[in-house]
Amino acid sequence: MTRNPQQRRTPEEIRAGNRRLGLIMLAIAAAFFVGIFIRQSFFS
Figure 1 (spheres, rainbow, N blue to C red):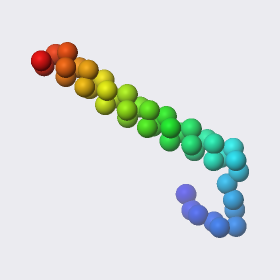
Figure 2 (cartoon, one colour; figure 1 turned 90 degrees about the vertical axis):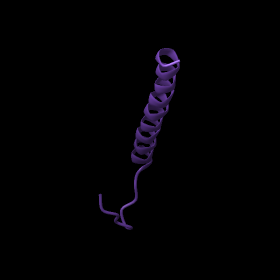
Figure 3 (spheres, one colour; figure 1 turned 90 degrees about the horizontal axis):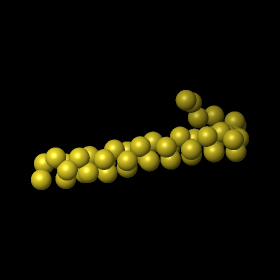
């Protein structure tokens, strides 16, 4: 993705990017907590 200073991102594109980033962060957090839960359940 090239950065063209004359072409601004539309609010819809900004919201889509924010939603994508939020879902990625949520998936990482969920995987982290699932890993902790599994470790506590099976290895303690």
